Structure formats: structure tokens, C-alpha cells
Length: 161
Image (tube, rainbow, N blue to C red; front, side, top):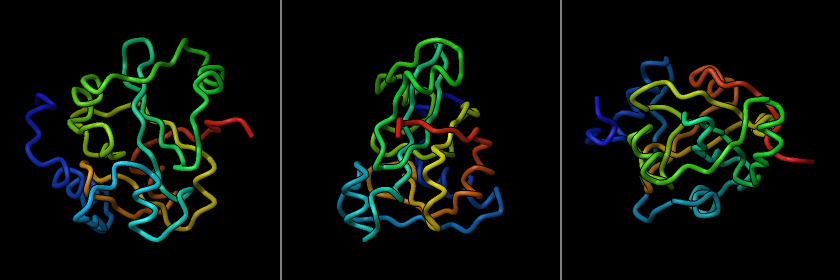
């Protein structure tokens, strides 16, 4: 399937959650929540409990880093841990092609094909995490353990300190 043919990425995310044995916890907001700060304000939670789904390019392939909204990913640190080359921020077109979702609304699930995923260890400090649900107006709640399980993510530090 051409990722750009995904008509309703939020429905795809909901389906992925239910298929993984989780509840559909997607919340849709009238105002956009395209940033961690906007999402935290709308949800009334700590920005560190927002899970940013950031797509990077590693050797031509997508790399999804699930990072705390309070973190700035240290790509050099991640690259050192992976030992696989240079990590670059992906272009919006690259993100859409590999996820079927636009930058600012990318979810950790619901992509046309599995994407190699890394999970920010600092997120385990929060009982409830919130992640983008496929567009700029939606988020879903999930536990750290369930997020790791449904994304098959490798846990690691993604920032210094």
C-alpha cells in the first residue's frame, strides 16, 4: 500500500491499538496539538509524559525515536549506541512516505510497514504516556510497557544527562 493512500491515519492507529489488545484511548481535540507543549496543555499533564514520535533517516531507512516531550534527542549519542552511521532528521516527505502521517501528528503505530523503533528510557518515569494518534488533533494514552511491546522498541537513553 502506498502510505500516502492512507485515508484516515487516526482510524489506522485506533485499529493498531485494538489489534494489539489495547483499548482505543484516542482523544480528538478541536484545536491542534502538534507540539509536546500544546499536547501537555490540552491534556493537563507534564510535558515529559508526552511521547514524541520522531522520524529520522539512518542509512536511507526510517528510524523512529519515541522521546519524551521534555527531551531533545542527541543524535550523536544515539548513533554511538547503534554504531551504524549518521542519523539525520527526516524531511516531511520522507516521514509521510514511511508513516502515512504528517510531521506533528506521527503516531508510534499505524504505519504501512514496521519501522525500527527506539524508546527513550526516561519515559518509564510516567505511569501514563500520551502519544500522537496520526494527525495534529489526536492523542492516545498508553503505559510505557505497552508502548514498548506494541512497537517492539529497543530501550535506550536518547539524550545526555
